[in-house]
Image 1 (cartoon, protein in one colour):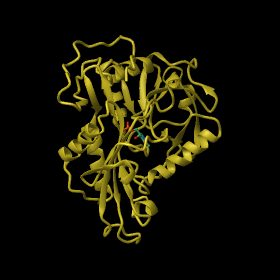
Image 2 (cartoon, rainbow, N blue to C red):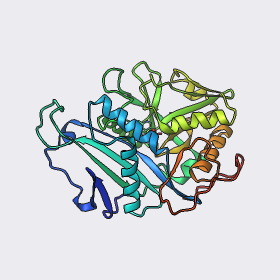
Image 3 (tube, rainbow, N blue to C red):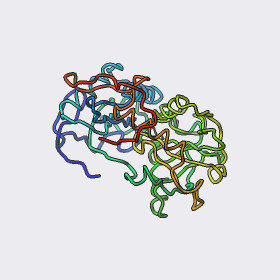
Image 4 (cartoon, rainbow, N blue to C red):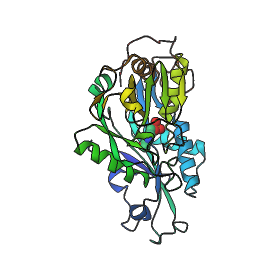
Length: 328
Ligand SMILES: Cc1ncc(COP(=O)(O)O)c(C=O)c1O
């Protein structure tokens, strides 16, 4: 989706015009991938605009920075306020939120420690990542020939720009071969995750997802989906998953800020279950959308309302079982 090219971008504490949010060609991050970032969403709910799990996203950003020895003079409250200020300055009701922390302009030695750390927050409109149809009918995916990063090479727990070179290889291969997405295995040949989303499968009534040690990004949606699934009474296990379980699972689905909860209807041209969105996927998807749309009670405190003037009384009752309204 092309950028609108207007509005304000937060750069090192100042709101600047979109066209002025630029960096020098000698910026370290451009050459060496020395950047970490976040991807979060703000939703328009009937109770006002609300960011989904903003504090958890900013916590993960700080953890990514810590892994890469990056320091920036903002604490958790500072990060949250900077995001909220940027949304308000742009008068956005719903948006995708991209905080970025990067090594800037000083020298181009491989050692980044002497290079100053800069930060920016960019917002834009971003609808459903794989299309509205995908949410209902599911997507066709392939297992990538590229593996996820090996342990102790590039840290998968850090959401670093460098890791997205691997994601791009997985995604390019999938779309070039006519699939919507790729699933990467880890270097041991076990299921890891998609190019930019975590993976769940259902088999005999039990929900499975690869553990953090399978070279995945610890997704915030993944965590929410585990919580939702347990709230709905489904058993969930985090366990190492062999590739072939993808072919014999009853249901498989992706989760993430971009894809939200998206069913997978085939893997390597083998139909998953009966090829339709399965009942467990549908129940989790429905509850997820009800929460982010402010239609279900926010029992876990996942929503941060953006505009103080807006009415945001709690949703009245638990609405499990109602239709998944998008209502963005
Ligand atoms: C590689 C990768 N895995 C998983 C996810 C899902 O994480 P989250 O739910 O926090 O967006 C993302 C998206 O950020 C990702 O890029």
